[in-house]
Image 1 (tube, helix red, strand yellow):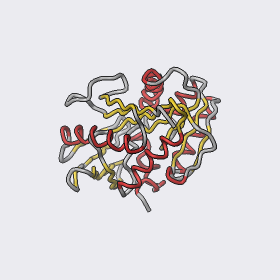
Image 2: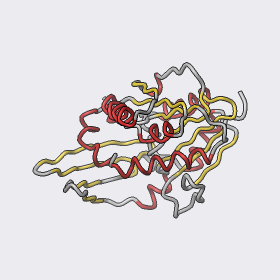
Image 3: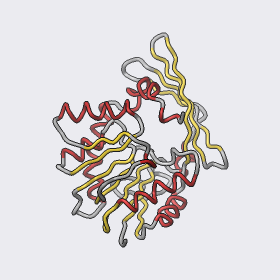
Length: 248
């Protein structure tokens, strides 16, 4: 089983990863994303949508929204949030590579470092190939991830985070396989119990991601250090790729 298919893990670590502040931030990011792309967006596909933070933001803007994720636990959380706010979105429980949409989209997003999860470079390339195929001409793919440059610049042998509820999370990240894979171990101390989770995913530089997007068929690609178009440099905290499909 792939690490991202472990619903028990998502349940244990959910509060660490998806607190209320992250939902507020996601809602703000949705408008920032729309400001990056053509103004005619009506339909949005969020690949690896998780608990629906960005689905909620796009739905509040009255867009036709679809979210795909392999985690049933996270999709249930998304459904609960949508129902609570009486918002509509299409939720699809499937592997990204097994998804077969019945429509094309104006905007496709992959956010919160959800790219590179597949165990082979070929499969990760296929995610981008499919995204290009699923876009309308003039449509845009927006990827927001943690770039290789950031990983190399800020990585620490051990990192500790303490939460308001008393939880303590230790991280032990590494860059492996010629700095192509970001591996991490999380240890969560909650009361008298400790939980351990290991994961790894491919991590890409701006140049590597640009080359993959070109291979997928995107003709206009812009790289930023944030969703507000900051430069991608050593001060950047994110790697944002904005790739537009300009022809069939």
